[in-house]
Length: 91
Image (cartoon, one colour):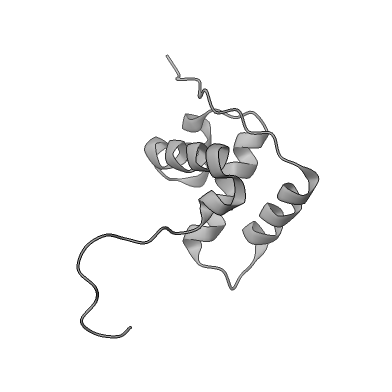
């Protein structure tokens, strides 16, 4: 039995334009492109399992980004600072 997400995504015209741009950029990181595609597919009404199959990723990852976008909108798709000890060497 498929799970139905309680986080229904409805995009404004501006949010949709920004996400479409992000999903089509060749210079963006893979993670940013996948996050944008997850939200765009969620806005069409697909379930997490269907989105995960289309993007060849896990259902848990889809659920995470859908929830973060629902609560924080576009800012929620950005990387958050990681915990732990600071890096010893520069990138």
